[in-house]
Image (tube, rainbow, N blue to C red):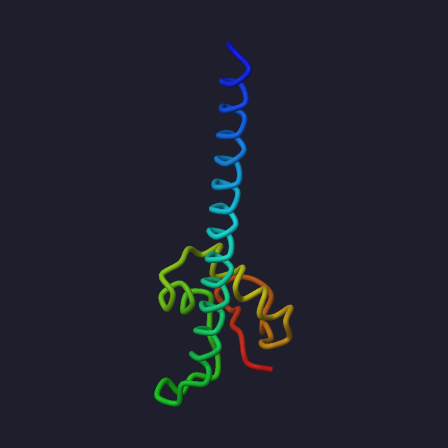
Length: 100
């Protein structure tokens, strides 16, 4: 392999690295935005006067957003840590969340 070919392959590798590195960051930013939008939808569920709901359960979040049980739990936990909602109950079907 001559020096020119080696330099050309090195430059191409650097450009591909930058391209795929930036692409990965854009995907992560999109996921963060989607998470924040979903958490806002949960809060809107409480504020929407037509629903007249003072509480929400994990199952409600699953149906509202079309997400898994684990994802719904994660969203509710994050909103609780942010001080926006409060958990009532400890485990099982008796657990629900209310606005703070």
